Figure 1: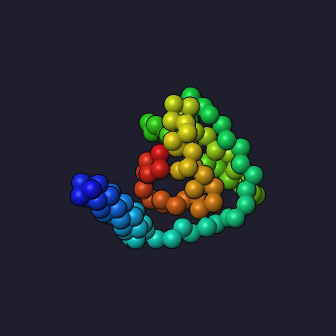
Figure 2 (figure 1 turned 60 degrees about the vertical axis):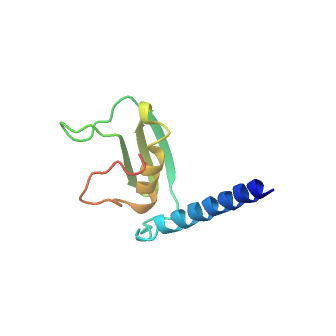
Figure 3 (figure 1 turned 90 degrees about the vertical axis):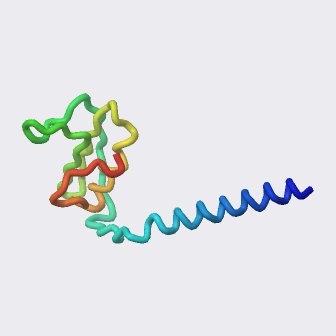
Length: 103
């Protein structure tokens, strides 16, 4: 009985620690700056993306007049889709820096 109570206590403690870690993980992030709340999105899986000479793009989003074209490299699907969908709604959310965050 003591062993069972110890296991339950340990499991509850671990669960509380995980909840605290998840809560703290988002504390230092600024809220998203939404540029559009609606878009018609066309997603293409491609083998390569023509972006900048000498640069290997993982994904690319282009939007105009509420219509967005998202390209994601086939070998990175579905991992990079979230990153590119953020561009659809948040625009250039990592302006001035290249990042693979969410990809």
